[in-house]
Image (cartoon, rainbow, N blue to C red; front, side, top):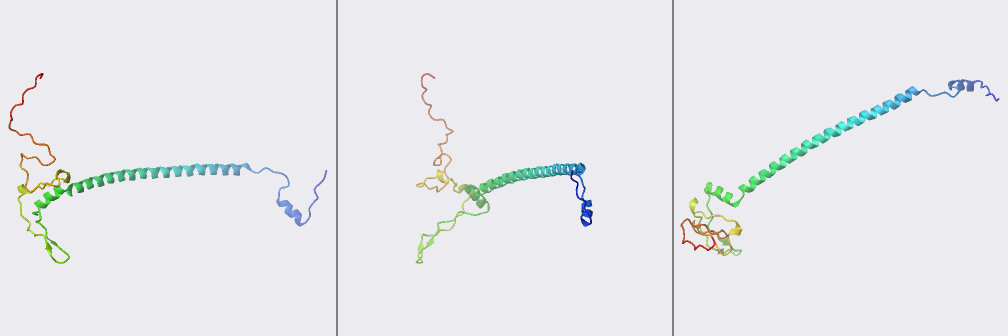
Length: 174
């Protein structure tokens, strides 16, 4: 068998620093490292899962707040639409003492006046013209005075009269 040559001097001192034979590495530090890595990973997953859950709860709260604010906005828009309707504006103007304007006059570019202006006339609330939507008034008709209770407005069915009329003949078989 071959023997290893003996080292002398500096090489011998250097060789003594390293183990001579094959030795097994200690298993305890490796197992401890693996357990720490697995434990740290599990704790990290737990923290990340908690953060995601908290974010989800905040998102649900914000969506609920957004829905309630949207509902409130729509309710306010309905109120605005009701207050800006033509009949509501006319009623409020009458309450404030405003009256409809008279006939206007226009100035042409050459300085001449077109039309005859008239002042606004005060009308009691009972004599004020009724504001109808555009589809109820035809173009060839204008409403000058309020209609009588017996006469129907254009587009409305005739009202039933309270006075009895001549009885219609009965049909046989009834």
